[in-house]
Amino acid sequence: MSKTLPYRPCVGMMLVNTGGHVFVGQRLDNKVEAWQMPQGGIDDGEEPRDTALRELAEETGIAAHLVDIIAQTENELFYDLPDDLIGKIWGGKYRGQRQIWFLMRFTGTDKDVNIATSHQEFREWRWVEPQELPELIVPFKKKLYRDILSEFADLI
Image (cartoon, rainbow, N blue to C red; front, side):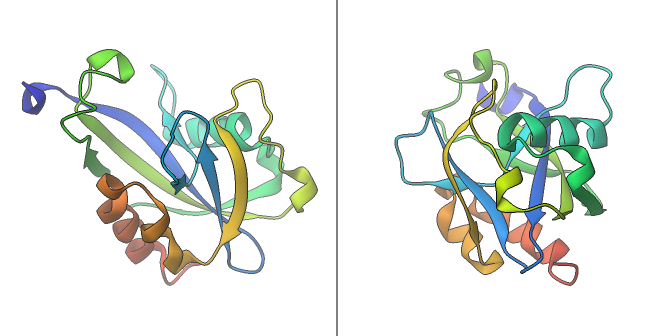
């Protein structure tokens, strides 16, 4: 059943500060001690770049003028949900996500970050070393995060 479901079209944002650290947030809806980079679904008719800037503002409070988009992944990256989550999230319509990732340089200050938005997804946030990312994310996204790091490594 799950293999016949499509992937949800999404974007992800690797937001890097001037010190080379990456923004991560701890999701409100996850009881597991896991941190992730901002991400979100592409609305019908929306361009991925526009989605990335919208989702960044919705999840972090960071306005578009405070970031420079450095790069985007050459191809979409995929991850599958674990079997116990398929059918329980996103209305049961998807088996996982297909994502276009954007590397963004944050030009603001920590005062420009406000996770208490009307679309709040994170309860906490922090900056981390890029190589820490795979150890902070939920297990089923570890390969995805390694792939993102590999693709953006020379640009961070």
